[in-house]
Length: 295
Image (cartoon, rainbow, N blue to C red):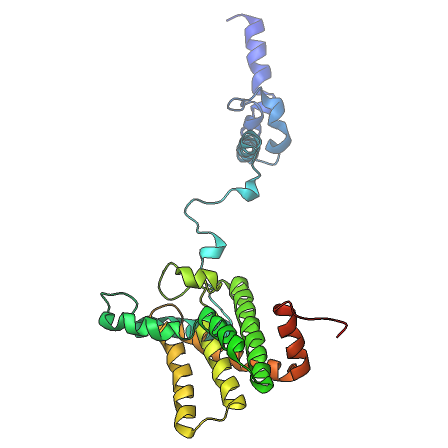
């Protein structure tokens, strides 16, 4: 052995870096460039490799996020359901009550739709129930009122008929607007008929037939002198017209009840803005093109 070689080995044994606690400074990083990258965390005594591995892990995550172009917070676990599909663990009492009432309404309405289809339990009565519902249709009453107005020869009769016609138009427009606003479907998926589309009775809430029947029956009971049996029949007719739409599967029970309430409101509103006989005669003259403003 040469003296220079012996001296170099003795120098390495006496070096500080050859001690066990400083061995990590001489170990190159995996994939790294040398001990200069590891010197910042190894002097603490054995924590260098863990720190370097965490640094490499963070760098790899940043490179993946930069490569995907999507922030880490926006990445969702594919096995995790979106928040809108998760059940609320602590819903409010109001939400529970409303959802329960809606569920009961849908269940009862479907059970009562015994004439919805020809294959239903009361499918043989479907045509008769549909004919009963037609008596409460908006076009039926508007056309009938116009025909009666053209044949009426008394001022009192024309006054009642003109106000009834305006009440019918108000009912049709109001119900159509609310239906377009709410857009509630019926208990069964059914395509609206031609007459329903013409009368703008497309959606379920509120029930237009029930609103119209309630308004017309209250109107006739207030402005016509009828015997007691006729008054009872008129009220029964209004109720059956509203129920007919539920039996046909076109409306829910709540749609029918809200329709009755809306019809009574239309009657009260029309009584408030009741047109006098002179105003009705002016409207009739304008409609028949026989009005003269200088007469």
